[in-house]
Figure 1 (cartoon, rainbow, N blue to C red):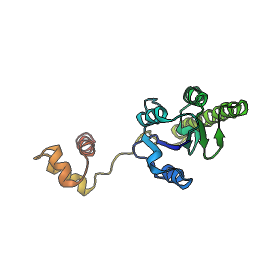
Figure 2: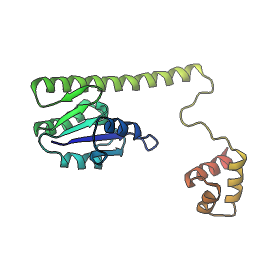
Figure 3: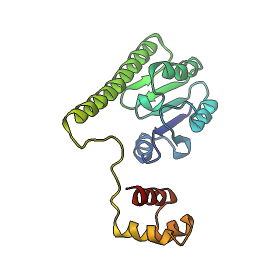
Figure 4: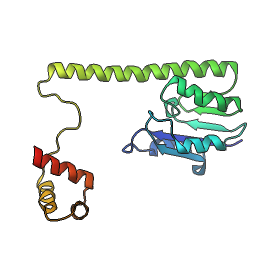
Length: 189
């Protein structure tokens, strides 16, 4: 019986460090922790798939929170049920053990429904906040605020006029995509 850990974050900018640390703190060997950066809107998760192909009857998969496994109740049930029927247990650090027993199944289904409800409520509150801001803030607009064209960025733009994107990005220690956005902003306001 082996205990595995699984950690996932939804965006490339987020860090897995906190989840991995929590899994190691409870005694899971780092070599048994599978982690990846994939949005909750995709079910294509290579590391999770690798883990689910590796686990055997009696093994445990530990996650820090239930939402690391799936984005909604239906998807979570599709992930959990086949594994639990093979004798795999799930340890959710902020909840406890979910296993293939009558009570375990009931608890799992209730918790997944509550997790999905919480996620939906967050989305609703975010949308309400945007609607309020649109009505009450004259200069409100969604999205990333315009970049301030600093002297460094202006120099990069000027340098770009006689050099390639790649050379300019390297010379000014910025990414090509950032350089493209700077060029677009300088030229189009």
